[in-house]
Length: 362
Image (tube, rainbow, N blue to C red; front, top):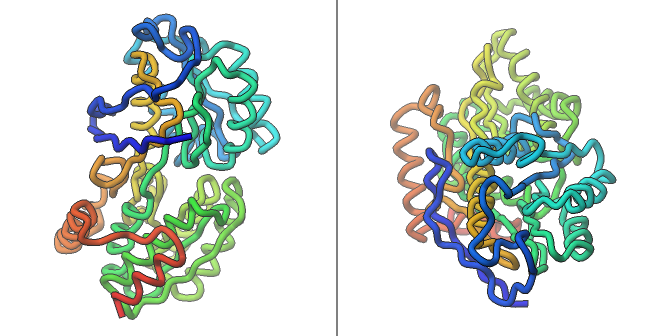
C-alpha cells in the first residue's frame, strides 16, 4: 500500500493547523464514519480515545491527547462521554477490548494513544472496517487508520542544548520508559544536543521498562543524581513523576538539581520546589484536535502518515523555559532550532545516526 507522508503546519496557540490533509485515495469505507459526502455535522460526530497504561492524568502524553480532544469537543458543542470520551487502560490487555467497545458504540474516530497499541489497532481496524482509527507514535498499515508521528528527536535536541550549556557537573541523565524505537528518538536527540555544545559532558542513560511506575522513576533518578548528574531529562510518562519527586526531595535538602519535562509543559510538576528547568513539548493535543477536525469535515487521512516536527510547531520547548534558562542560552537554542528547520543540521533518531553525528562533533 502506498502511503502519503503529510506534513502539517501547526498553530499551537489555537490548536489549529493549516488545512493540508486530503482524504487518502482509494479509501472505500462507507457511511458517516469516514466523512464521505461532505462530512458529519458536529452534533452527530463522535470521537474517543483509549489511553495507554499511564492513564489520562499522567501529566504527560495521555493527558495532552485528552486535552486536545476536550478542546475539540468544547469547540464543537459535543457532550463529554457522548460526543467525546476516553476509556482508560490499566494494563495492556485492556487495549483491544476498549477499542472494540468504542467501535461497537459507533464512534466516528477512535484514537489509540501510544505505540504499544499498534498491534491491537491493526486487529480491531480489521474487525471494524467501517470505523476510522488513528494511532499516535506508530505507523499502522490500514486504509482506515491514520498514523500520527512526531520528530521527537528535534525537540529533544533543543533541550539537550539547554542541558549541555547549563550543567554544572558536566554530567546529565536520560531516563526512558520502555526501550523502543520511539523512545530512542528522545534519547539520541537529547544526547546529540548535549554533545553539540558540551563535548566534554557525560550522559547517563537508563530505561525503567515501564511507563507507569513512579517508584522506578524515583529509584533511577536517585542513582543518577547521587552519581553526579545535576540535570535529568525523562521520556517516561507516569514513571517520570518519580523523577520529579526525587528532584524535589533533593532540592529541599539544598541540592541544585533539575528535571527536564516531556510531552507537555511540566513546569507545574516541579513546584513548589521549582525543579523544572524546561520541557520538550510534543503537541499531541494539536494532533488529536486537528485530525478530529479533518475527519469531521470529511477528510479523514486514512492510510496516511501525518508527521509533526519543529517547522510545524509540532515539537519544541516550553514557553516557561525563560523562567530558569538565561537569554544567552535561549539564543543558542534558537540558532540550533533554525538550523534544524533549514536542514543544515539533522537531529539523530537512532543509535547509528547518533554515532554518525558524533563523528562530526569529534
